[in-house]
Length: 116
Image (cartoon, rainbow, N blue to C red):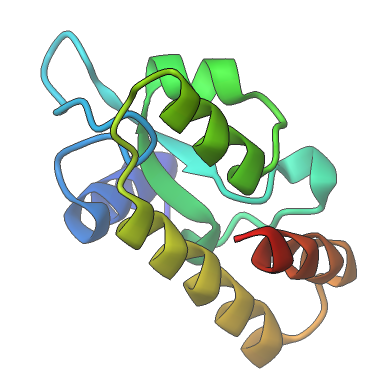
């Protein structure tokens, strides 16, 4: 699946809002795909590792861990969709268990699940 297809899938699954800050996607707040486990931390390019996020959150998060960025969003007074983020982390963990491999991502996710 190409990038546009993966973005459409993430928005259809996650809703028409940024999972980190809660802003509704519009022409001025376009959606992007954000990797739960960043690629530099061993995150795979799987649909289960991608969520819908606005450009601001995707850029500001950088390589921060999901639990740390969720806490930062709350500190900033934003409205992260904690239920959807929790489901996404568990969905990715299940996909890594099911597909195998992804040793770095599995270790990273295990740490995140302890903090979640």
